[in-house]
Length: 631
Ligand SMILES: NC(=O)C1=CN([C@@H]2O[C@H](COP(=O)(O)OP(=O)(O)OC[C@H]3O[C@@H](n4cnc5c(N)ncnc54)[C@H](O)[C@@H]3O)[C@@H](O)[C@H]2O)C=CC1
Ligand SMILES: O=C(O)C(=O)COP(=O)(O)O
Image (cartoon, rainbow, N blue to C red; front, side, top):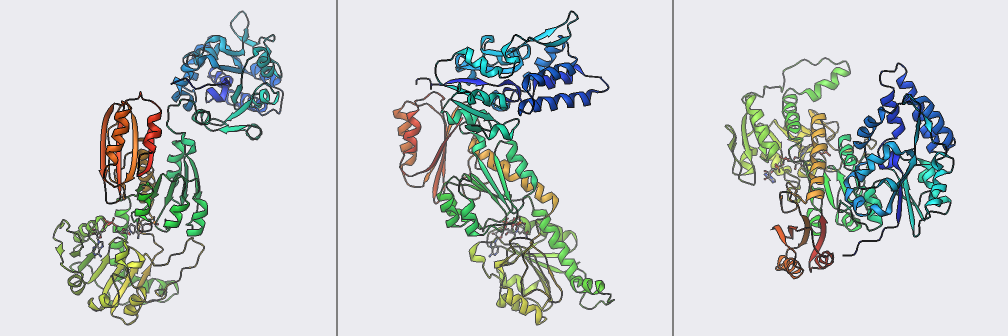
């Protein structure tokens, strides 16, 4: 394959090639132990900034900074060591690019050759491709200033330097400062790329032909070879319903762009916002409907920052090649603790007594109050939450009965009921922990309440639509039920500003809470780490472990290019993929296919050497839903 053509690329050094300004770092080293160090370093930084954004002339900024420095020749090796550890991340990751295109890359900097040359030499850039200032020293090795003959020490120096280079062909400039842009303004460069990985200056960004948050983005735009298969800054994350701030922090640290919308969005609003979004993060309130998915033109994955995923069209996501990840255990304990507290609180009729006290009414009585020790607790849905509650409830002396549609391991002394009816008829407290699948709509209605013992307590911390709320209200009003605790509702306000409406408001011994079963600091922090990790692992390696709708595959990493192929589950797709690879003599290092009812998911690791045409041919394999290459 012929090398792609690169125009001449002139890269700035300070805050572009490296994350920092060389002179600021030098000041830091030279002023170690100086009583006024912080003030002087601060002054130097301010002068750097004024020079970079064009508010004072460059030569003045340089002269005044060097005056403050008190640096010596022997500080320079230390500075070089420090700068080598502070090369911009995206430059480090694309070291191979610099080695391949060394003849086309120049470092043009108003910084100093003494520290630039050794840093860029590690990237294969020769000294004659470094254009920078040089220090002057006195007899004792003190840095006294800069060589005034050097064109880069003068105002407009970069422009003059470029003129003298007299490059034949297209010239691109990449940098973070105003003087970098001026090379483009002068007409001597064809394009200016504002590089914002380390600093972003409004005046510079406003004038750029392109703004590149990373060097990967520059390479991607120019179809040049890159280390990542896709620039991470192109991955846009939309977070709804306020997941813990840690989630945004992790996504940002990975290089993604993150937008947050407090509260939920309804279908129309989400349809409008979803275009261009790669990762959608939601909680229990946001419905990811077929219409939303239709508008989602770049969706890679959905993160449910909660347990329940009934609000998501899981099959629709699958058919679009979008895996959904949730946090299946992160708030389990929080719900269990709430349920246990609610049982005790209802058994002591606290929801009635507490508001009376706030109004000054002293209602001391044992009427209708009981201990929970020895009482029968009926758990409907013996999954993660139900079974954990089973253990905790036994520990406080309750007798546990449970009913689940699936066969479940019986924990402790819990008694399995064969039917829901059997459970409802014999327990003192019924608590729901089923999932929110459609079939569970109105699982508990008038008939079920009637089966429950008079005075029984009822808890719903699962999903609102699982209970027929008017029937619950009637059972409470008639006095058949002794009390209820409800955390979830068929219609929940979208934001904290909306009013909550329900027939349950104002009923005696009813504890209603605003869907806070999982809303604890611990749970929210756990969720905000768990879900982004799953999603980033999928994006980086294709790992679908714990995805709720995708075949779960995790392959070990190896020195290979990894083909991620999602297709409709029809016979023959794997054979077609392998035909393409065989016809093009591509060596397969590892391969794993897993299917479910709707899709097939295959990961193939191949040798890094292959003809580019392979990728196009794989994309065209019939029944392909999504295809990407990772390297
Ligand atoms: N209030 C809140 O803030 C929270 C609510 N939840 C809700 O709790 C639900 C349960 O969570 P996990 O225990 O982690 O889920 P899970 O999936 O481990 O357990 C659900 C269990 O319910 C069973 N089930 C489903 N339908 C049933 C039916 N009709 N009758 C009997 N059993 C049935 C399933 O077989 C499963 O064993 C979540 O799906 C979510 O909707 C979860 C976390 C927080
Ligand atoms: O985890 C769940 O399923 C919950 O119901 C908690 O939902 P939330 O994150 O509070 O919207």
